[in-house]
Length: 397
Image 1 (cartoon, helix red, strand yellow):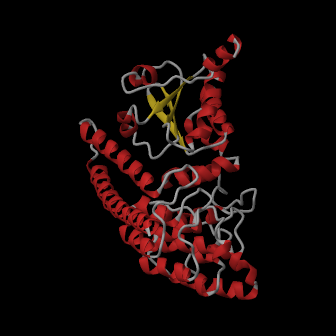
Image 2 (tube, rainbow, N blue to C red; image 1 turned 45 degrees about the vertical axis):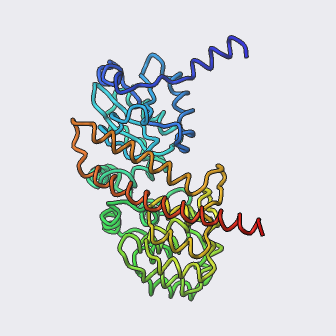
Image 3 (cartoon, rainbow, N blue to C red; image 1 turned 180 degrees about the vertical axis):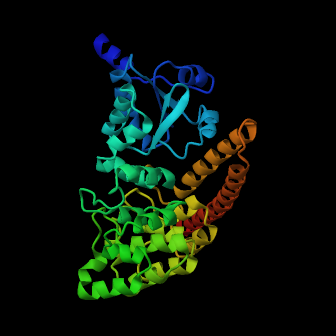
């Protein structure tokens, strides 16, 4: 590699800010600051990190750009209550102005930073960005209701205008679980939006759905514009309200499980999230393969273990799910649970050591998660050892 290439490589390396340097570099900065909360193990971060590297070069001298490794500086991650990574936080005059989570297109970050450099307020920047589908989707799903209601005063069609691919905001909301999903659905319905066949099961209007597929049977296995299957939409409602009526209706109508594999939200994950062994058994009886991997490379057993649903894990193991199966990254279910358990313990230790922030509620949640993972891990290791013993005995014979 030439000296020129080495210089370019160094120029593209974004500096890291840490717990020790955060106050000076970010909060005392005399220019706007972008901080990319990331981690080496985070797969979506690998999409965002190169974009941030490019922005660090492009914004040099205009705006500070940093990365923050949440494992190296967990105190900052906890203090700002960052919910998942990647997460980009924007600061101005020592105050967090806004944040954008998930892996977004470079244009989203560019538009926001351009607005900051132009001296626009966070609200005005947001209104400009709502003209694009990508950010509008993110905004609808992630902003507080009060913020949405405020934005609707300036953008009346925020929750009713169809996206470019034909998907509606209501369908988007029905297929994305969140703590405020019910309120968001109610807010959207107050604007009398278009309601699709998929939406009917998401809203609990099962009889209307059955009538619609009687008139057009193809709708039963037809995905919506975003790729969500009608079964997934029904199950998202089941998880939200604890009501299996529409899920039962879709299954009884003869939905083809083999055509549900490629939904945006994994069917195996959706089944597991019901935390209902009886329902899980029904899927198995209908021919669902618990070892099949979804688009993300995860099996039903892996999702059950990840969420710590020990009854589901036990049932799947009894049905022959393989705990030693290796996935695309050469890791087993046991490896995944160990990794989640380790991260949870590290996060707990960090919260317990931080006397400046009240993490009482999160600490209890984290302790419960750790206990679940320990129980699941013990069960998986016991099953794995039994399988190894059986294999050795068969080999000897």
